[in-house]
Image: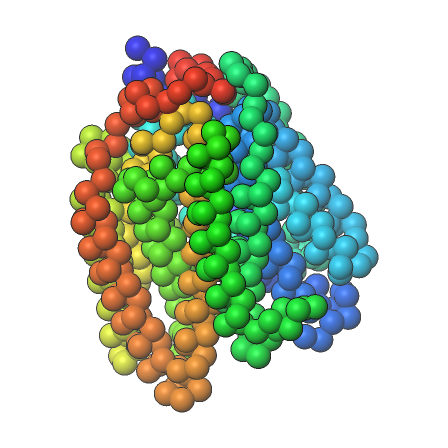
Length: 484
């Protein structure tokens, strides 16, 4: 039976390469900023930081619109286009001699990255049959590895070949991924004419997201260029923008047009609450990823070599648990696994809080292992829960919204966690500040665990895609990507 087959290995490899590239470029530039500042004769971090923030923010802004377009025009077509745009923009980034031009090209690169990450999720969800949870578990490892490998890969390339090498690396990998995707992914077939894109909804989402990103990323006292809006006003306007988006999408649905975001889908516990859970969990987890090495370096004077070893247990826990949790979610449903993941995350944060008083290396490594286990238990089942009730014709926009929620969680979590730690450190010192932030993270994990348990999402069932889907705009049976 087609539903019993697994996704073809070559197809999954192409998707994994695309997702890895898109996510890697969100973190790989972190260590290249000092080299960029020297190359472009800048003395302030704020002058080169847009190279990172523009990529992350633009990706979130564009994800829903590009997801909706790929649902209409063909996921394979747009996924392959993502490789082409990403590779071309990367080559141009490597050759620029102007910082403003580099920032502009990072926006173009974000278009390709958004197509790769959002459409990649949809392709895996659509074509994995009743092994979707296992496939999503493997994809969760790819997401995590891209974040973990970004800084060391970027640091090595910059040290050996200079900052342009960070972008040149993307070119041959994009070409390889595009060639494999063209060959391995099944062709797109559209049964109906694509609807007009909801440009009003896309504009509202982009504006609200840009304001929220500015409000949480910029330092205190900063104002929006050209408008003079401070951070609190920017955040308030972003929330107002998201409210206006919901009102707009209701009107679009009532008018019988195709909205950017389905309000009915957002109302469902499995999808709407799942996005909220993904936002909070990703924000807390990545905030810990960023805080732990910074705290160890300043609170306990740990050297760079030891800091690199701290994240090894994270990779071990994540790699061991993600495929298992994804497979089990196909049978047990996501409720128990996602709740357990957040409980383990709370235990990890409390263990790290204890280390802020007494540094015991085995306990630190065990805490980081728990952080990897937490992510491994949570990520794939939550993704499976979110996408289980989504019609096949809307999988790309649903996957794009999930990627947007995760990335926005990273932006908000890292910014707020870092700001809180800096404020507390100035008054209490690095170790006391870290302990308070870790305890707050544990409380957040407990709250997310309660939410995971309370919403009682339906067990993951890949046949729900067939039952709930309307006329397929982009088709291809699981057999088209059947197991090798």
